[in-house]
Length: 529
Image (cartoon, rainbow, N blue to C red; front, side, top):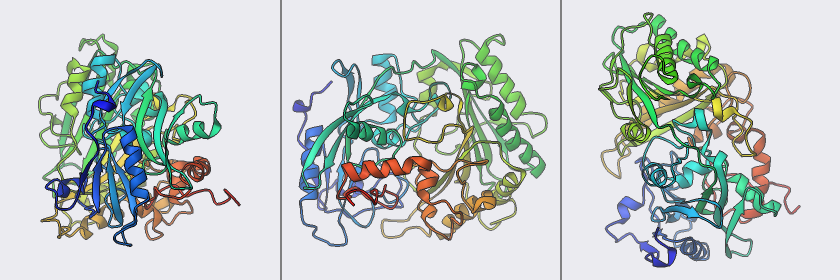
């Protein structure tokens, strides 16, 4: 463990610095900022000092006034790297994790990534957060949005284990305070600040510097991992309907985390057919102690594969192409038994540095026939037939089980879903000044999403079959009446009834609205009235 006093001071990167081009953007090459400087902070105290300096400086350009925070750089919209950004505070140098006896919990610094959880926290503690599979995603954003991954159906969300959070906040006098808030804090305002970081999203209340977790879940000793694919060529609409329908039905029927089938996690990558040249991908993992047929995990895996990869669809093959942001795993058609950490390493990935647009949905029930038909059409079979892009897809993750257990009080309101969807489309830009003609890619993902949820105003409205959207997959189209024709605003789609409480927290802890972006929490209008 490196102590804060032993670390280098904050580093300022200005436009003439060789590091500036790389540090003024994230993984999504769609967004490139031109800040006055990027400040690489190394300690919580350094973060507070850098924030104080930033909020009390005059802007050189009145069109660039925002101060933003970056952990891993995976923001899907322009919340961190927008045209109006003046300063980026980068907390990625703060990536330590250690046991804190005073807090009786494990401290995880906000610049750490999912990979640090697996490669550092697990070997030292024997526990792990149920975090995501993409190794380079920063925990500062991942945790504050709720956080989920392959262990979530057996262990819940990352925030279900969050005990405390440290945040640098800006007061109404433009001074900066470093506040530690805990789950059982005697002060109700600080307790609310903790709560807001259990699903309220990043970039809303201040600069998160550290998290503390108690009672970390123990990952399985071994898992069975399988990866399969189906060629699009020759796949009929009837077969597609059976595959997607069976997938949803299986998880609707298996929601008990006390059983192996209730812990089994999968992702189904419905790629664009690309004129029949692409593959549909499936990855599945379940805890098991052997691949013997009598093992509960092995039996659950076999039951799932027989139900979904059945004789009613074409024969599956080894996975030879990427599934979403995960690379191919060609040698796992037969489920392979391996240590949990080894399987996590096999799945780890973050995709190439490219432009991307994303959308999300929680599903409380399996897909309707009309939804499956819309997905079939827009994956290159009827609609947008002139659009061929092998990097366009709809990813459907299994969800629920332990996530849906009666939770502690958190800001994540979606606690009875069985599936989680992520619409994705990727493209390249030739250079920094050429965005790479995004219009046709944006048209595809917008039309596909709107068609899937045509019965509810083009979005997965709260209640009924769906239950809104995931704040960690932000989508500014939800603000636009052209694409959201429902009666539910973006805030309800993300937060449901929790939004009013988040607004009160915002007014208390960010009274000057220093932390703002296209979907930041708005201060409660009645505060101070």
